[in-house]
Length: 252
Image 1 (spheres, one colour):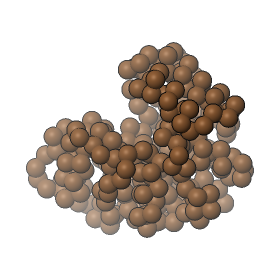
Image 2 (cartoon, one colour):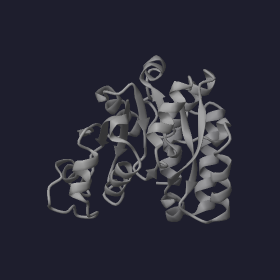
Image 3 (cartoon, rainbow, N blue to C red):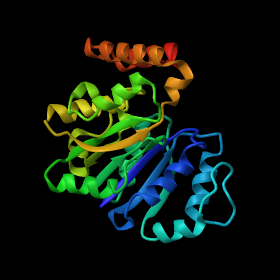
Image 4 (cartoon, rainbow, N blue to C red):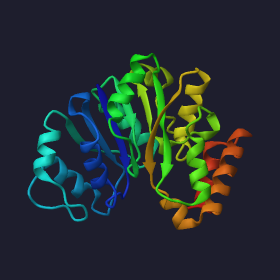
């Protein structure tokens, strides 16, 4: 059984759509719970989540939801909203502590996994693959982002990132020690490094779609340059504080 863990911070524009997407693209009997971990949102994110959970007739502020559909598809799945200190590593670790499943599936609020993603993950774990992700495509037709998306089908460390989502068995997650909370950014990559070091990573050849909103906001080449720089800085031993300082100065 899978526990889906979604860290959020001011995701009112996306979280309703994501929950609806998860409903229509999975089987409730494969998912024991969905844990949404809020890091202090101020934009109505929690209102949308709580209305989704309660399935009341009142519509959320941003995304209208099909109440009957929710009741039918999530009747066997527990959906929980919890609060945590801001920071994806802290939020995801908090969610993992509450999870009831034996497989954890970490998902960003603007990433939409493929149809039957739950069964695809379970199939991989049954094969002995305890961790991995889906290949990815951006919601953009820009040639560079299309190329970057195409490269994610290969099981290369350099092609990995948190936007591709992350499944991992609870046993392996606990053995590693979870996400390193020292990292405000790059936390996904730190865990992925540990998985590759253990030769325990697979790529499911089905496309997850993720938002290119950061690229649209700041510019594709600017964002790509700074992401490469962060990658190289970490390669040469930059600390967690160095990385977040650089990120806040150049991207935030």
